[in-house]
Image (cartoon, rainbow, N blue to C red; front, side):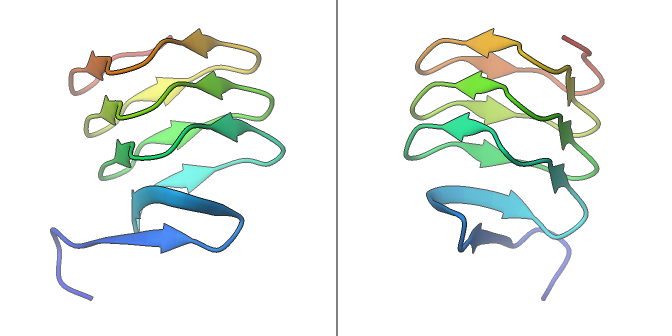
Length: 77
């Protein structure tokens, strides 16, 4: 895989995740989001459809993000 490619997780169909990112399960993510380099989504989050989580974004446990939200690089929620 090249540095900018995203892959789909079998546990979360329709969610594109960079190979360096972590998504802790269980969590709920709608279809279409992209999760970029070194991002970390902690368990029990609820992320809406078509979101974009930038590089180094950390989403804490039990955080809710609506549809079509863009979270810029280096943000912690």
